[in-house]
Image (cartoon, rainbow, N blue to C red; front, side, top):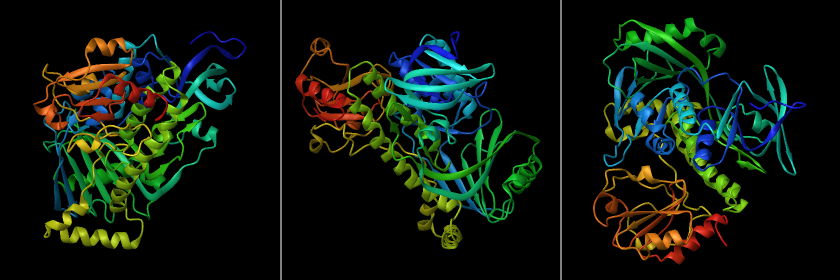
Length: 524
């Protein structure tokens, strides 16, 4: 940190990131990959402890791949592809999570958030130390937008100072100081259901997967979830009943008693010890605007979704993936600020889709009214004997949300395709002839996926000085099949991996116009 003069940081920063959790680190890493420097302000003195977010999706791993974080997560994380649901002690659903054998990454990987943050920090130090400055124990106290940028008042153990930045990204979580300073308010639903999250160490031969008990003897009238992690770590999430006092329920002696009771119920008698305990409340809330002048918000600072379906951290990573390239292009003068105005409609749409699915899971896990509770009891009671009912118990794991109505979607030839990702939707991963995967070639600029004999050459594309990388592919094989490709088929991918447009044939001028329209915010 530079020496302060009269309580001010003498350096003017391109971007200040408020909040050094996984979303904040992802912003800094994503900007650094685009060549943009940032300073990260984090109130704590180190990475987090305990589970917090506990599972990442294949889409998040594809995003992490770009900054060197995916491989260590794969080494430490535990993939899973099954789930079991129980009513009392009877199994009423066995769930197989669909896997994509052609993709580089498994569909779901359990890993504690503390590991994710540490691997991000390792990547900062190894790859981008000259572009990312992390200031621990720096807490934002106030925010002011001026004619020339944003001023932040920051407190530290050794005193306070003021920092000036061109742009500020608020990634400081559910209790965001940035959001409060803006006066921005959430809209949506706050559920009454509260949950205890607890990690324990225990050796067990139970296979990895999602286990959910409804109304078990160990937690009567409520639910309990159990997930396995590596290193003999097990995560409990259990719902508190309405008559329970959360302050009493979260006390270690009461949490350990509940866990002990459940382990005895399922026949686990190995020694175990607690690692971490926390209290959580389920919410479906979002801001209506994620951009406020030169201040933008992402992750839990912008929206809250229930833990059911692993949509929390993963949706935050998709926020970052959407935002950082747009901000970088604006900072470098390659795009108008109108491009940044597309961040809100795209990500609010995705948040509302996540909320729609998550609220169904939340209402089943924690019925908000007697009628919901009655329906759940009926479904669970019938599920053991009637297979057709079991789909109602499906926890609806997170899937990547596309942007079908994005202002960035460019005119292509959608009607000519019977399959493959449409404009606004994320690319579909598959192996390439050289043994790599498509996800390893996305960004930091646009990617032109061209199948055999396109209407332009590498040299022509380079001479056009467009921020576009050509990726040639054969018009047959697993990749071509996934993209409904024929010779001369072209897909133009945005830097975040979403399809901007696709054509059966496209010349260089068509591609130029599509990129220019995108950088103008959707139109010329």
